[in-house]
Image 1 (cartoon, rainbow, N blue to C red):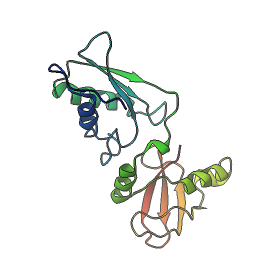
Image 2 (cartoon, one colour):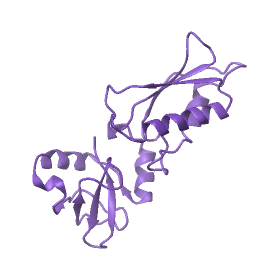
Image 3 (tube, one colour):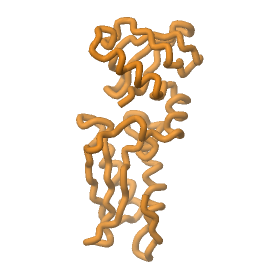
Image 4 (cartoon, one colour):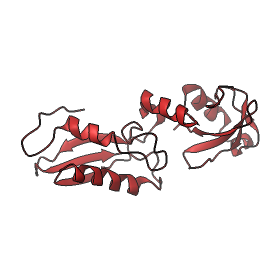
Length: 183
């Protein structure tokens, strides 16, 4: 991250980061686009000192929220006085759940979504290609229920309320919950 002193005509890069940290993800509004790691870089244009260049990497290339996220970013910066915003979508390197901040993981958990962990990533790799990944009762022992903390749960469906989540059921409290998939 580049730190820059504010000029009389424009805010600092740090200010832009703090403003974008207030832009919620449209599908999971409890976390910001910065917490999710979607915002990759912020810079001022070298050709136009009043144009902020915001580089974003969607959670996956077909994410239906990408356009909405771009619009929300632009609206936030324009309302704060930035003259022009250029949104740059960068697909490589691909977004990964490793880019989630610890704050995002905690917010997901508190919101009732099991955050991705290294253990669930390894579990997903081990299950890929099998019928179990289709959600036919796959036991997911390393995944803790965000409501009661039990690891006694099963996958109901590989796809949850959004494509980036899978649906699980705790076998102790019997509550269903989303799990933010590892990517």
